[in-house]
Amino acid sequence: MKAMGIIFSNIYDSSLGELTNQRTVASLPFGSRYRQVDFVLSNFSNSGIYNVGIITKYNYRSLMDHLGNCAAWDMNRKNEGVVVLPPFASGNTGVYKGKLEALYSAVHFIDNPDYDCVVICDSTVLCNMNFRPAIRHHLGSGCDVTIVANREGDQLRKKHPLILKANQKKRVTEIMLDTYVRPGSYVGMGMFIINRSLLVEALQDSNSRGLVHLERDYLQKRFNDKSLKLSVYEYDGVVLRNEDIRSYYANNMALLNADVRKGLFKQESPIYTKVRDEAPTYYGKGSDINDCMMADGCVLYGNVEKSVLFRGVRVEKGARVKACIVMQGTKIGKGASLECVILDKNVTVTDGAVLKGTPEHPVIIQKGEVV
Image (cartoon, rainbow, N blue to C red; front, side):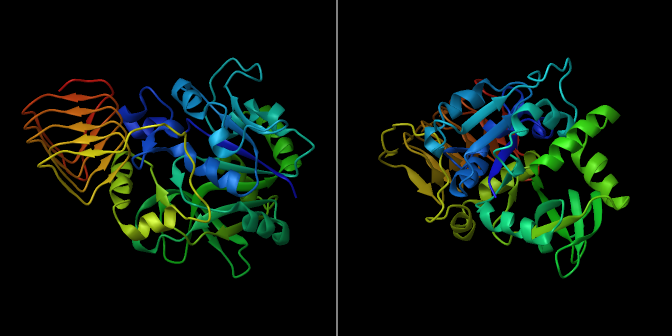
């Protein structure tokens, strides 16, 4: 069975506040050198899925700049590759409100008889997954849709958009939306496998009825009236959900844990990103760097502890940076003190400035600001 991929780049922009004022969720920097879209694109590439559509809504200039010709993901191919799908491509006059409406705007791309099924993914759920076993599971299940999910046993009583219960054969027996994780339940990972012809039919029918939400208006509604069979494919690896500012901060900090890094960045299935030629990071005399994750091109003279630093960050003498996320091109002045702060790209922190947040409520400084 030959599969194509669909990625949503904008669906959850509003939940990440200031970090997505000028970019899509898909192009949000993560983990010192990556963008969130890198993870799902790498998963597709490592799974042999090379025809991928990225559905956009607005603010996608930085995403297109990052993707370039997609050679980094081995998707600069003659007959396949990555296609950016703007919201008005189908002639619609409004920006989409939900996933069904977004998919309908890309129906011309999806309705390709060369492909048998479609793998649909959010860009907020980060993992290192091979889709081949999931597609085989989908075929063997005889179900209409397979939902990729995991178990969140340590996060009971935490709300998630999609909660599932299934029997021993992994057939879904109950589907719940926007509710709490319960013992024995599965948590949807925003990944769906569906037969292409069925998806096209569903999109045309939903558009004629004014339905816009994939989970509520299609999956749950059709499941409840017994016209749709659903299965679960359980993923048991590391899963990071960047659903809001708090989880984005916590998941970046989680990368300082060796077990999390090992589960997310696997040697046999690399996570690719746009290659930039940078000099190695320079550690100045008197600098003190402890338990950090950082990219190339940094110049460090101060003290940095338990932080994630992107390319080209400069920390001057006497500066103290603790439990912070510092994005590309940011300059931190002499004697500055930062704790639990997210600094967007090209921020300038003046000499002696003091900024302090908490893990639950990190301070956010927007792109290009001077503080």
